[in-house]
Amino acid sequence: MNHARATKVLVIGYVWPEPRSSAAGGHMMQILETLLQQGWDITFSSPAGTGEHRADLTTLGIREVPIELNNSSFDTFISELAPDVVLFDRFMMEEQFGWRVEKHCPDAVRVLETSDLQSLRDARHQRLKERLKASDDTDDFSELFAPALPEEFQFMADTDLAKREIAAIYRCDLNLMISEVEIELLVEQFKVPRNLLHWCPLMVDLPTDAPVPFEDRAHFLHIGNFRHAPNWDAVLWLKTTIWPLIRAQLPAAQLHIYGAYTPPKATALHNAAQGFHVLNWAEEALQVMSTARVCLAPLRFGAGIKGKIVDAMLCGTPNVTTPVGAEAMHGDEPWPGAVTRSAREFANDAVQLYKDKTQWLNAQTQAQALLSSRYQQSIHGPALIERLLDCQRNLGNVRRDNFTGSMLRHHQHKSTQYMAQWIEAKNRNPL
Image (cartoon, rainbow, N blue to C red; front, side, top):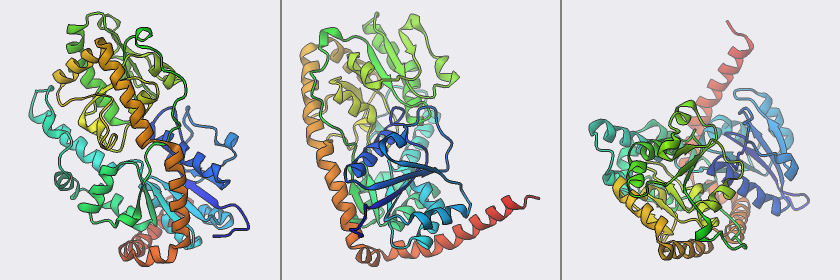
């Protein structure tokens, strides 16, 4: 580590961060803010186009530099920047740029922000599709929820996506994991060394204001980016199965659905007469969450941990979800609401929580305890910095102990390098 200047960090983003659109965007901003608190010098780059809800990083003092895929201009850029740490935002960025980083900045610590295990989420999605294709029963999905780790491994292991993602994890010096369940899956089933993984969940400051009281709240709420497949599936399950069961018990109930990048297929579900309101993007998600009485998160597949549920806890809004929604989120703490395995159970628990003030207040208290025990930025922020510094101090040993990563880098870099150079040459000289 060079003590004569601030540590230089280059973040290579899959997209430009949108903290008000997705949990992944929010987590990236929490990481960036943690690095800024150390006085580190940060540059954020991405080959993606700019989304309409992107954060303005320059106001935080972070440089923004667009980059291109399969273009040697990145080599010049990173050589001149000479970062001490390179953070890849999701494994696809490590695949694209990892060999260039190693070639031009071999002493930079390479860190992967996994966000969640995409291969796990994708495998669960395929499993749900098979279940829906095999049966018309849209009520009970208990056999899909939170299977044992060996079973997760079985339906992931043969996929190309898992092979790519776990290879990228091995190639990095450190991997930020948002879910403890996914850490155990990687260690126990895929035999990834535990010292390559660091638990870094969502990091928040505890609320200081009293939440909006029970009597001043109304309606159910669901929120989530529509480009995220688990959220869209949750909306469909609400519309076709869960919401009619809730309305049968609460005929005047209203459900407000918010989400970034709302497609026409979602707005087509809007039906005020049924109390089913699709309301597009919420500019202030915490504000609408604070006035809802119950948050609904009927997730039938997914991975990682759920930003919408952390937001609900911050606002003192009890929630109802599934084992997938609650996975890796509460440890030994009681759940602040209800965790259910079928549509009917989901609807019944949602109605009970909506009506019963005592149960509602108890869930709210549990949410505050859960935030305090697992999600405090004041705990996880310093732990992240210490882990990065330790990795930097002991980089030689980290790499020496990770022969599998070294082997994978050797083979992947050759194939990726030659493919990238071929694409670049083709782009310069199209037929």
